[in-house]
Image 1 (cartoon, one colour):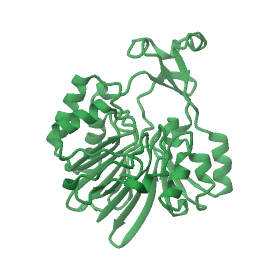
Image 2 (cartoon, one colour):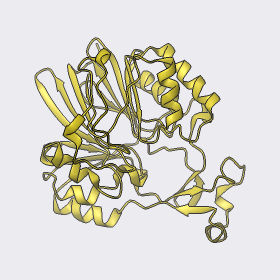
Image 3 (tube, helix red, strand yellow):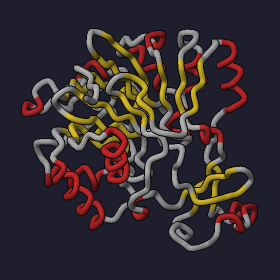
Image 4 (cartoon, helix red, strand yellow):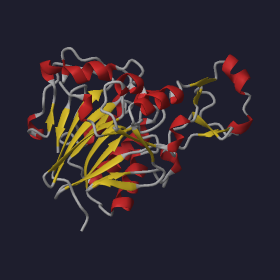
Length: 328
């Protein structure tokens, strides 16, 4: 029998929006609780960080999924919500983009020694974005004239993971660094995706490149990690960072590696800002057939996707802002 957790409490610590006037929807009861005035002194930025408290068979685990953006608003917001960083046993970094590890150096100074960091070995790879006119072209990235395109402002390097600084901090604090390149159950009922299988290439975010072993190539996000949590008698929570590999690919991968078909909740970045409305409508229709009890797209999900989800699944779609809490 597949193991399952009894309860999960997720709280958005850092995301793109704050809102002290957003009301909790009565039909969600206590499942989705908006922060109201408790988030008055919180900050928002382009980034993501979510805390998790997992209850399983009398045990409690406290994790952090991503560390927000470069402004390190996570530090301020943790203080506002009276969450002690010392309590995080594990920190997951979903992928190598700066809006998911940005607070790492600032936060590392506040963590307990021997805190475990779990990430992909590709977290250190340099990453680049193409201009809109080059996105989707059939150009071989390995032969691009980087310097020429940089001058023409057709390609730019994204802020790079601070490998040297982090390794120094990690050694000083005896952090445990765990690099994941396959799916794994990290605690009873809690699974880490490993590289997400690409069943449909059309879902993968376009226009982003990665430098691996000296070769520039299109980024297919082999470093992207999602968390899958099996909640007793309810099904899987699918927690994503940006969803660059595609939310449908991410869900199918979850079902394959866990053997659990029922999707209970979908929370996180779904990266639909660049997606056409027709494709968004189709994706939402497929998600609707899966019949999750809750879907909350945040961060890079985009207004079009959330509006369409509200249209098709009004009683199952929730908005998420800094301080939104999910009792699942």
